Every structure is written in structure tokens, then in C-alpha cells.
Length: 327
Image (cartoon, rainbow, N blue to C red; front, side, top):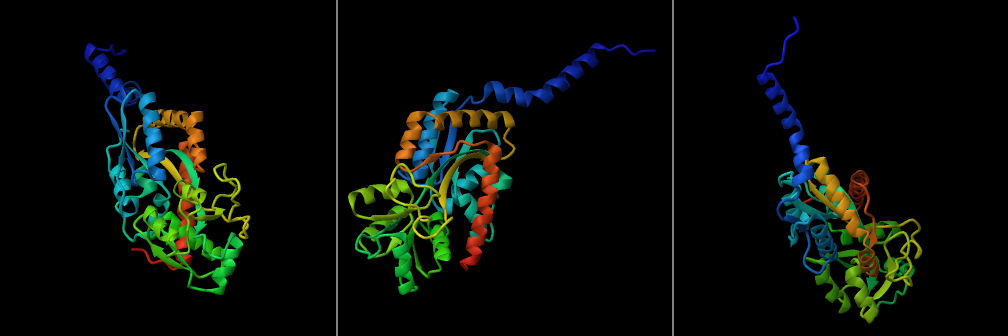
């Protein structure tokens, strides 16, 4: 005999269905219902900060909820990265991560978080070439000339960086490996602290990002020898690439991307991706970034994840080949 459904059976089935669909439905209809924090692991005025505030403003307008950019520099970006990696997976804390996410695994013996395990990629926002700059008094007016000078004076040429294990440090190590030269590292607490010593002639060269370097090149206080991207940039088309300057195929760029805590609902990731890409593709924003050498990427979460994996493997090889001991 066929069993009839009781009122209790029907209510139970409806309740189960609601429980199953509720998280997705809530993510689509109520997110966001309070302010979102966008953590920038760098000091105000840096390239990271510029991109973070641009995204925060655009996301605020498009999400209809305040997105507040917060600067949390220090410890090789570990402080900011860990904050977001350990945050609730609800889309209310975002990270504007950068190259440090892929460098740190090779620089530290123990880390409390893992970029691929604990952070969900949303979009690689932009990549920003660095610029090989020297003091004007240095007798090297090209990348090729700097390499020749370093070969004449092995282990005598001093280069500055934004700190041990930073992109500017490892990019210079990658440069030295490719050029087969020996140079001496002088780490600073940030790139902005190293530039005054470079302009005073206390060190020979640095590889700061374009945003920090271009104003000093235009003022004549520094000489730009080569950009670190594969192609020349609109912000300084007269400066050749390092590849053009004698190291074919050489490339090393900084990048910034939007991430959040892993296990954040896919609907929220999709919404953030959509609005972040729309913000990055605003013509005015693209122009602002291009004026400082930035190139908008605005790729998919999957493409960003692939990039993170490739960069992590790349820097692991550089750290090992340079003989850098993890801390």
C-alpha cells in the first residue's frame, strides 16, 4: 500500500531543502550587508597602497557598501597575509596580495599560513614592472655597461633592496645570476628608505617599482637603465627592457592580486571578481596605472591560482641558486 505523506513529512522535507540552499541564497541576496576591510601589506603611498585604494573605492561604489583600505605593513607581508588567511570565510576581509605570497614559502622555515591552502584567489589585478636605476655618477649608461662594470669589480658593486627576501632583492639576485656577476646586497626596511642612499651615491643601484622610481628618473636624480618587464612600458617608452640591454628573455615583475579566506562561498568570490574586474577596466583607472607603468590583468580566479603556483616555483629556484638561507 502506498504511504501517504503526512504534514510532518512535508515540513521536514521543506526544512531540509531550505538548509541546503540557504548559504548560497544568502550569499547572493545579502552580501555585503556591512563594511568590508581590504588589507594592504604595505605603507601608504606605495604601489600596493595605490592599487588597494583604487580597488576599495571602486568596490564601494559597485557593492553599495563601504570597502575600507587598511595598511598593515611589516614582516615581509606576513602580518597582513596571515590576518586574511585566518579570517572568517565570509568575504568581509580581503587582501591585496603581492609577490611576497610566492616568495615567503622559500624564505621562511615555518609559516602559519599557506597561500594556496588558506587564501582564495579572486583576480590578479595588475602587474607592475620595476626599474633598474643607478646614481647618475656611476659610469654605466646601459644595462650592458653595468654588467661589464660589475665583472671588472666583482663583489664590490652594492645594490639596495626593500628588504631581505623582497621582490626587489630577489629580482637583483635573478639579474646577477643571469649576468654571471657578483654583487653585494644592502637591505633596507623599505624601498623608500633605500632610494635616498642611492640618490646620495652610497649604493650603486636598486630595482624599485616604477611608481617609486619614475619621479626620480624624470628629475635627473637617478638614471634608468632598464625596465624589468618583457616589453617596454608606456610610462617610460624611452627606457629599454633589461632583456634588450643584454639579457634576452629576462623578466621579473611585481604583481598585485585580490584574495580572501579560503572556503569563502563561490557566489561571493564571483561577485567580488565581477566588481573588481569592472573597477580595473574603468578607462580612468587604467590610465592612472599605466602612467606609473602598471598593466591591468583582471584575470579569472583560476588564472590567478595558476600564476601563484608558477611564481612560487620560480622564486624557490632563485632562493636555492643564490644560496639564501631561509629564516
